[in-house]
Image (tube, rainbow, N blue to C red; front, side, top):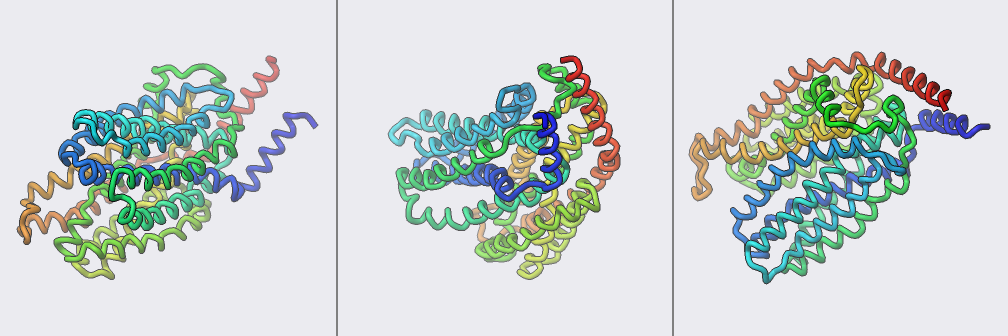
Length: 466
């Protein structure tokens, strides 16, 4: 049997069997690793203000500057990944950014304690930019590029996007329980912070790198273009001719605006009257985990975008329940479960939509550019997070919220209620209507068939030329 025949047989067997548990775990531990790193970065303000005695406004300004830079690096990262051709593959080499991300995250907490404030500020900004705007950005840009070249069937993509999401959710949830408790005993000095971060950095760097060594790029989806370099004009062509990626980007933006608004603390402080009950709501999110097991079965019957549309309506219903909940914990839990379940398809299945958009690019005769498509979605994620945080302060401020008051004015309470209920509900309803314009789900059977036939013909032509 020739090597080509053996490779074809192995690929067919892999499609039939799906993704094995060890491969699935290896693949999923990278987003789990980087997810924890992002959570640790969320404690940077507390460390800088309380331990390093830096001004809170200065720290906030530094993070704001980093977000502005972040949006630019997202788009450049997609372009660079799409232009990459190495013996390790196109997306796989960027997995080494896991090491860089964790190293920069650890170095954030190693700011020179005796240095002047400008030096401390420059150190924190530089390390944060390396960790978030460079290394994490490349890890976002390379994900789909890597996946479509390491795996070769829709069944495998679905398994990686659904079952594969369980590991990150579980590990991040455990981190959110363990890390705060360890802070009380370790994070009492800068040295304690460094030891605490290192406890997570070392093992999670190793686990995060596992898929680089286990999962290789073996599937050629670039047979049409071969080794031809991606040019800037190719990027512009994709951004101009593929309107569907903007629908996914809008979905990601809306979800991140809402989830990063941070109105929960104000709601539980001023309306429920017990901020500690937020932990009860957080614990109920574990109930949503079993959904990941049924998604593959659901996606056999309906399209990815239809499931996302169902999710938007589910989330809108949950936020509507919040409007009537007041301080009722059972109703708040019900609303939280609905909103959480509704957002899962957007957050977990975005990669499948990016693949559909790349398949569409190939179908209409332009470059696939999964890296660029992923960067557009990543940019929307980060823009949404920034807008959410900013809108909260602006809207409650305009409504008269004053942290110095023991009792907030009625206008401020009304705004907090609306931000926790009807405003996000309306946003999700509008998103549902926009998602109705996504037509690729109906076209995908024809697109996949045409692409497979075109690749086979191009491969045969290339082999006959040799």
